[in-house]
Image (cartoon, rainbow, N blue to C red):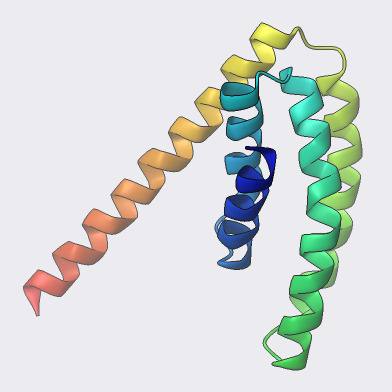
Length: 123
């Protein structure tokens, strides 16, 4: 089951859709791993997938480095701060926060889909 979760997460990540959410959900709901451990596994999972994506996208020359570098630096600093905060939060609260985050992402994706469908129908 862990290998299947890893494969699905890798595929979703390669599409640029955030496979970490799939990984965390799979590890917590299907395997029963504690939220903090699943989030830590996600961070470790991210390193090789990010490196692979950087290499492949660099070869295709589709990375805008002037934009990417500040985002990388800000993300690295924020990840450290977030990890420090996450260790201080109770597991149930952390699960709720993650659920709210996924809900917001879902609402945004549905809104974007409906908006693009409305534009397509008007043409």
